[in-house]
Image 1: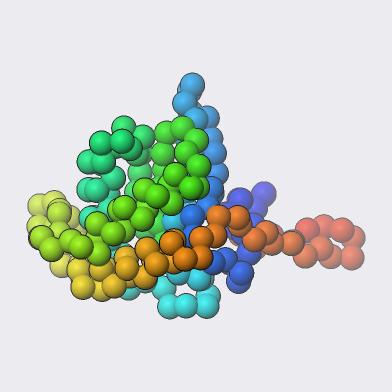
Image 2: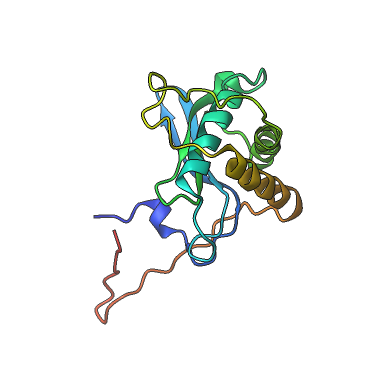
Length: 171
């Protein structure tokens, strides 16, 4: 079984940033999946579940209401490893375009002072798992990283080989 591309990224050297995770064609439409990496995996603590859940709700609401980009947004949600989010968009926006969009979206989180959208028992499957103060702290840190040390090229992983030349896969 082939190793999927996201497992070919060297997570020991991955920095916070925005990366093109994959591009696909669905019908006549090009779809781009972005890795919105907020923390350095295996080097920094993962995001707290309540904070990333709150970020998910606020940023999803922001993106789906943004006049320029709302029709391009397919999906926004957290990674299982809790080190960032995936953003799936129609077309082939550049990392620089998405960087500007993420600076706007995460700045919106930093300045957010209302009730977090979708946090009632009828609108969220885990409505008690939210932490706006920590979400704002994480968002501020990510905006600073996007502005001051932007990374957008994945470090690759070399697959080890045995004596016969067969490659090892970890997933």
